[in-house]
Amino acid sequence: MTWSEKLKLNKQLLRSVAEAGYLAPKEIQMKTLSRIIGGQDVIAVGPDGCGKTSTYVLAVLNRLKHTSEGVPLVLILVPDKERVLEVISQFELLNKNKSVLFVGLYAAPGIEAQMNALADGADIVVATPDRARAIYLKLGLNLNKIDLFIVDDAEQIVKQGLQLPVAELANSITKCQHLVFTSVIHDKLNKMIAPFMKNPATVEVEELGELKIETLPQVLYHVPNFGTKLNLLNLFMQDEELFTKTVIFVNNRQTAEKVYKSLHSRLKGSVALLSSWSVEFNSLAAIDAFRALEQIRVLIIADENIEAKELKDIPFLIHFELPADKESFIERIVSNKPGNEEETLALTFTTDLELTLVKKIEQAIGQKIPVGELPELLVIEKDKKHIDTDEKLPVKKNAAIPVTGEAFHEKKAGNLKTKNFSAGMKAKMNNKKKH
Figure 1 (spheres, one colour):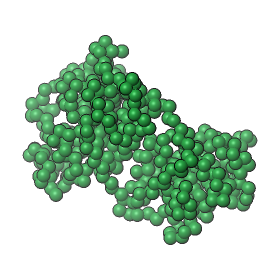
Figure 2 (tube, one colour):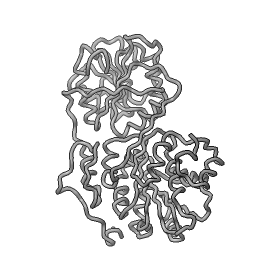
Figure 3 (cartoon, one colour):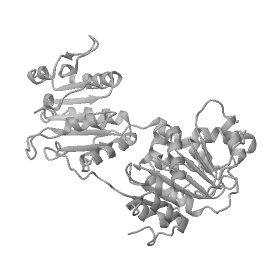
Figure 4 (cartoon, helix red, strand yellow):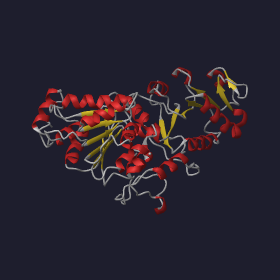
């Protein structure tokens, strides 16, 4: 399919994409551009590199008039300064209308220069949520004519805890179209966008790597928070007959100590740390010592570079946390003897905020990680921070339609905040056993 077929882009934009070397639209563009051009709210879900940014850049440029008004018509929120500059660069690549004015807002020494840039005129504002909110409260960002509100890399914005400024900005716009672009969709993100999205179309694309890497058998357990991870780990480790030898990976000493103390209260002397930094904990100097000692069933490893060959023949590898770089994870779970049913089983525990890294791992290994059902006996801990955030997010007056996918509970009517901010306020597992 070519750009001129079915996608209603103007002729100038068709020339721009051809000059930029975009020979044909990507899957996400074919599935979303017509909806966006038609005025529908859209949630677009896809991995890095699938074309999310160019999708909304094309949609924005396609709807702008030839004459600049100098007042913001489009507000785009991204996680950080680097993304602000990348998005503006993408606009500059495809935009041939030199009268269109772009302004970037991000953390920088002083705020006056960015406020002056807005005062000089801006059609498209690309900003981090916190800086956009700060300038808006100083009455420097005019939202009265915004007709397109875009949140890009939404999962990263949630990870940074910037849900409140996003919701406040959205709530301050009377009426507009909303677009959300993200690599994953989860409960915390749904909570952020539910107050302002109006019957959105959700479009999801999957782009796995062409090369499929043979891995150990894997199971992914998706839980709401750290406390539930601990409960799941303790529940599994109670089964002494199945979990005879288990290595648990965490990312730092603080987490290692929490996991050790939680397990030690039940397992006593059968849990140890690799190369412990305190005499308070059972310690082993090497993984070979773990293999040799029958009484030690669980070994916790904190942020250590462990080669795959050292983990050979250990029945269970549990990633309690995902390492920051996906390469470390992949090295540990690559299989050297595919098809052997007696291989190690790799279990991964993940929360909403780690799902982005899970997606990147799946792209790299060329396959989806099977998701395991949570045990019926698992105690789900309440996420206090999540509950507090829910109560603080402003809700639009017309957001009365229930949204599917909201986490845990529906808000009581008494807790709904439907007021707008006043001008005064603006200026303040697997086949071995079913787990």
